[in-house]
Length: 316
Image (cartoon, rainbow, N blue to C red; front, top):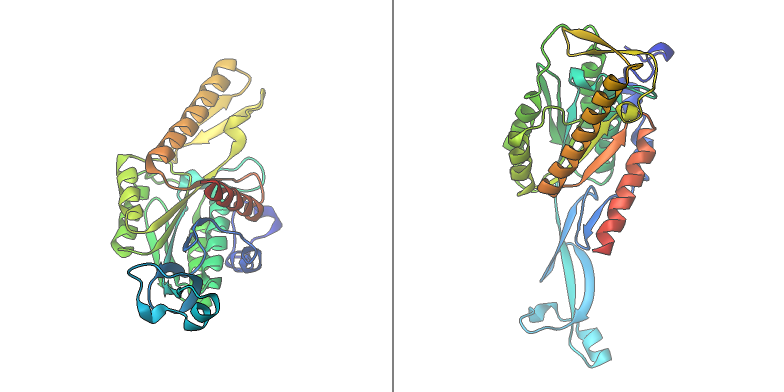
């Protein structure tokens, strides 16, 4: 169903996700080292001997293969020099997108579920543009949709359609039971596919994360590149001092009065404690965790966060 003005920010359509292809082209991604870039497309690892792409010209070192010597440069400089090539290695991408009922929350621009969908598709289009295969998992509280990695626009459009379908099914009148454990389930499914040399991007608010979540991410990261995109809404960090809000856990709802200082303090403490817990968790994991707000445009945030991460990496 197409997204109308009345549903803008609440739901997102396949067409809107497909249209993000143009916004993904100018994203600047994190460089881990000269020969290895996150989201940079095909990985390159320096190696001796003949590969696919010329890497550099350097002085000969003991142990270098004499077949790699550049005799013209050696004759001109009177110093042995070798040509170093790089080998292209395919790095398929798996993008995991959270569309559980806890993602159906937003105080300004959009629901977290919409922001997660946008961030996931920006990554998908960027990876495809770099020439790598793209697939992923889209999950809610009861089901998981899988798209196997392929190097085609059709595959990315299929992923967009899966995301949009689950996004459209989100309803505030959700009568089921929220499933925090669904995050662990989908990560374990991804670990069964990403045996090595994959790029795994997890887009979620990480509600319900546990020691199992941490251990699964660490296992994934030991053989693959993993990036976590933490989707959040800033409402709980800057509560109004009046009015009422209705919170829901699915079947049950409760009305909270923001006029009461004790209620505002309890909500504020909960939000800040959770933020602190996630930061501590990030340090334990040692993985990139990029916070993306549902209150602002997704593409500029993702671009800025990746540029900042690249700058921090260059400083190391």
